[in-house]
Amino acid sequence: MRLLLTAGPTREAIDPVRFLTNRSSGKMGYAIAEAAVGRGHEVILVSGPVNLEPPSGLVDFASVESAREMFEAVRDRIGECDAAIFCAAVADYRPVKIHEEKIKKSDDSLTLELEKTEDILGSARSIFGFHGVLVGFAAETHNLEEFAWAKLEKKGCDLLVANDVSRRDIGFDSDENEVRLFFHNGRRKTMPANSKAAIGEKLVEIIEALVKGAGADASPSDLFADR
Ligand code: PMT
Image (cartoon, rainbow, N blue to C red; front, side, top):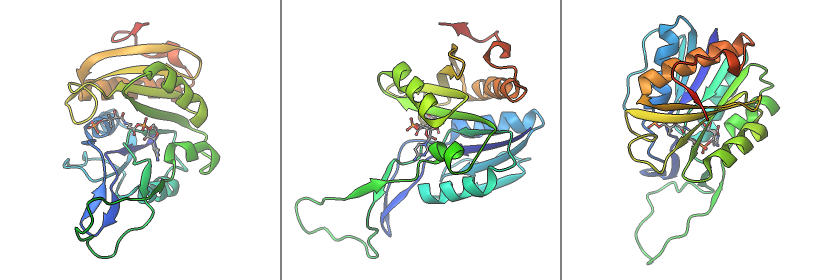
């Protein structure tokens, strides 16, 4: 299968030397990409700035910085894909104005006006016309289940992978993750804490089953407990 992945953070410029970003390391997205290549799939990786080597064997790699660049890279590549997995931590807002020169320290306070960035996952169905298996992530600090179901529905996902990013041992910039899976057919599963590599492997197996139309019931049962 042909699979597109987004990974890592975005950077939204304030001036030539400053930007808004987040703690995403890219480890989760790169682990999924690595697993998918290892299982013989054609993988396109669209990545924000990270300190990781892209897995070897990708069919395409796009290195981007901002949400707008990530949007354009995904738009140009998603067409022929069987599945798209949006693991990137895309900035939701960017400065309205990018200062051409470094902002000098003058007043006691500085106000930045922000505007919404492109919603890349939310554009997959509506703007890109993507009909393949759509997998979104949700990074939540509270009300994880409620927000996950809402995102799944609103963005037209087949699967939503949610992680609790209030914890330091999983989620952003750690080697492990623990995720809860919310399927379009209403099923929920929990993948207990494990290395991002192991979680990436299992997610690719699940996505393979979804592409084959087998759905949540056919996904591997060994690691999951229904909750
Ligand atoms: O990179 P690591 O350090 O390994 O950490 C992994 C992770 C915590 C970043 C990853 O597991 C994760 O949760 N990724 C999603 C982060 C996120 O931004 O979640 P969100 O709930 O804000 O966004 C929901 C979904 O919409 C995500 O699929 C996101 O990629 C997508 N999105 C968000 C905003 C936007 N403008 N465009 C998008 O496509």
